[in-house]
Length: 451
Image (cartoon, rainbow, N blue to C red; front, top):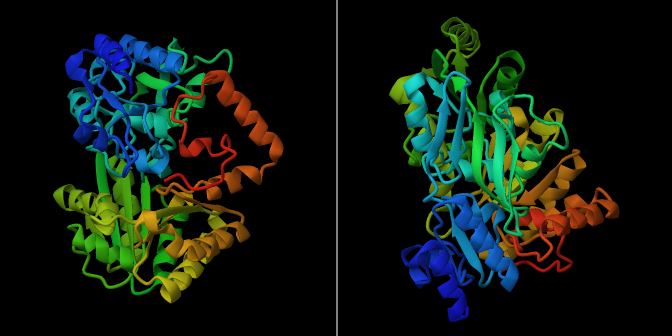
């Protein structure tokens, strides 16, 4: 990158917040693909100025929060700018009577939770790594976590956004009132776009009262069929907030991650919260059906869910692993889990299946480094074909291969490609925002894997 551009960036954010040393760049890159500079702006105006300069120079830009979701959607790029928003971490307004909070995108979920407890409120979004995630990252990636079953998508819990467009302009959508859409629902359109249409800098959050009681149901099962049947019962006959299915391999990883289940086969983990009578009645109903189940509260429940959150990093280890995600209709979920596990038992016994059971969303953890995708490509193809035969689909979450994502979009017809390309071009005429983002698989005409 030319020295005059570095000088211009330093003038915008300050010398100390424009980092070009390799150690910082590697923290915001992937393998050998690194940004030329990492910027740490302190307010929206600085973000806008950086983006305007990038647009003028044609430099790629990737917004960055805690980086926990980056491998899932922000694919590696060579050169350009990473804009780290973690210095923008203030709660600008906490209106507890209206149950809203206006926050900057770099605020961590951990700090947000601590601040909201003062008035017994919380934001019901908890991705798998809540202590590390930023609010802006959750909104940009629509990361909802296991509690999506009970509370719905992250988009349901926001009222408005401030967004820096790829042209450097700043727009605001929505407002503090629940009914605030008179045109297109721009708030929820921009949320979940993975930074491909702009950089989210502020969010108006919709809050809820902290539930009166919370408890967890845990059941270790002897075989896959028993675990699937129990999870189906919980989904159909109770109001679980989160419902996680773990196969036998995943349960072994759960043990290594800190929760000693005591079982040798698959397991089911379900979260309940609400009024005390409501929670206790549901747990009593399940306990009557499943005598060997455990009811976990307090520290014991916290240990179990923390182990669940650590399951993926524990499985991936230092070498890394491939994560695939499949979604099928709920009525086909049992068949998919059974056949997928049989396929893995035959070809990849060390792989694990973990499902957000109530949402029919299955994570397939493959003990193979992402750079070595070719070693399991045939297996992934068979699993993808299985999902598609059941009316669902499969995508690869953390590799540079866009073929599975493109296949899903292409299945909707050529017109959708052209429409999405026009939307992208309207927002980002220079094509600078997250140019290799997985959500932009439809824009690229190059079907080769990004590496």
